[in-house]
Image 1 (cartoon, one colour):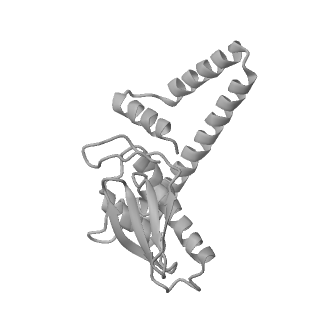
Image 2 (image 1 turned 45 degrees about the vertical axis):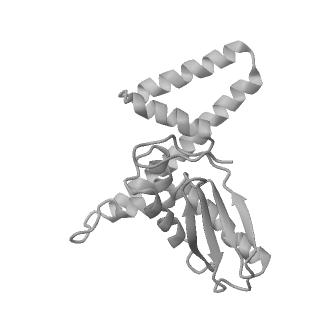
Amino acid sequence: MSAAVHTATARSGAAARPVTAEQAGRRVEEILDHLAASGDEQACAAAEELVRVLMDFYGAGLARTVDLLRRSTHPGPGADPLGGLLGDQLVASLLALHDLHPEDLMTRIDRAMDTLAGLGVEKAGFDEATGVLRLKATGSGGCGCPSTQEAARQAAVDALACFAPEVSGVELQGAGGAREAALLQIGTRPPTARTSSVTAR
């Protein structure tokens, strides 16, 4: 997800204007009609594809939210009613994208790490200044060969993109002590009162 998308989303959220589905649909049609009138078929096709992708993304997120809420109709005493939502990668990514996830950055990083159980990596530290998360191989995730470590690192990148998009990169220290960096190809949210933003490199 690009920084531009995060910024645009934050701006639309900051405006806090009530928008109905009809109003939003009408505005999208106006924009697409304007592009069609320009005669730029390539731009028009790209815009229509963008609308389809976003509709699919948000539709999947809403469907997943409804499904999770149905499952947790009767949470146990003291249970967090949002627990199932906050731990789901798709729903968590939407909440984080719109700065609606109630947990702080380190808690969300820990959630991402929880999804890596059995892959032989653990958190070694987080540099708030650069946004880089340091991981180290534990030797319990298979043969420890480069392909296995790369798979674990990519899994970490994918999980962090969902739960903690503020993380700009992952640095993995192998069993032999060598470090390899993997930069996340995601944008970061604009600065908020709760967390600081780090520009993805």
